[in-house]
Structures are given as structure tokens and as C-alpha cells.
Image (tube, rainbow, N blue to C red; front, top):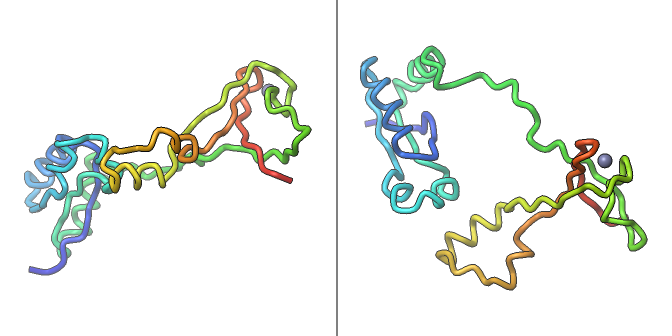
Length: 154
Ligand SMILES: [Zn+2]
């Protein structure tokens, strides 16, 4: 048995089974990895890299082609995920208004960073409540002009 590279990853086990069935009907054998971990706690799925569908080395290229043909794999003309603008700030900067249009109609976004997921696994959900604010990266959004930004010390 040669190498079994990861053909595709999924958040939920049933998605992996769907594709496994599709590939099997086309004569390609696959193995599903990390299915149980994701089943026990869906929250862990992303942290462990998702549910993995493995395919034998020799079937890899055909598997990719089948995924494209079946619409499971879409060539992404990916919109950049990070549309954040960097705004230089100091102590005098008013962080309660939009730096672009001066609107006060803004909100702060808290997105979990990579460290957040890593700690959740390592500490097995024992997140120290006091440290939560250190684990989130803050950004801002203006509901008037639609801009998103974060502040950086100048
Ligand atoms: Zn604005």
C-alpha cells in the first residue's frame, strides 16, 4: 500500500461520506480520517483540520478530476478574505468613530485567532475567562460606509 494523501477535508462527517460515496461509485476507494473526533465535538473539527478524505496515491489525480466534474471542488476565484484596512492610531485617535467617514455608527468585530483554537484543544475547553480578550483580534466595521479596519500603533 502506497501513500494515502488527503484528497479533501470537510467540517462535518456526513459531507465526507457524501463524497466518499460519489467517488466509490466511480471506482475510487477512499478512507475517512478524524471522523469520530469531529462527531464527538463538532467544535474540534476545524481545529484538527477537519474530517479528511484520503485516497491512494495512484488514484489522487483521477479523484481530483472527479471532484471537479461532480462540482465538489470549485476553482476559486477567491475574494480575499482579509479586506481589513490598516489605520494608524495613537493615544489621541478617536476609536469610537469611523476613520473614513467619521460616522459613529460602527461596531467592533471579534474574530477568534489561531491561538484560540489551539488553546481550546490543548486546555480541553478550560478557557481562562480572564484571558479571553487576549485571544481575540479586534477589528472595526462602519455600518454607514461599509469599511472595515483595525488600528495599529504608529
Ligand atoms: Zn465609515
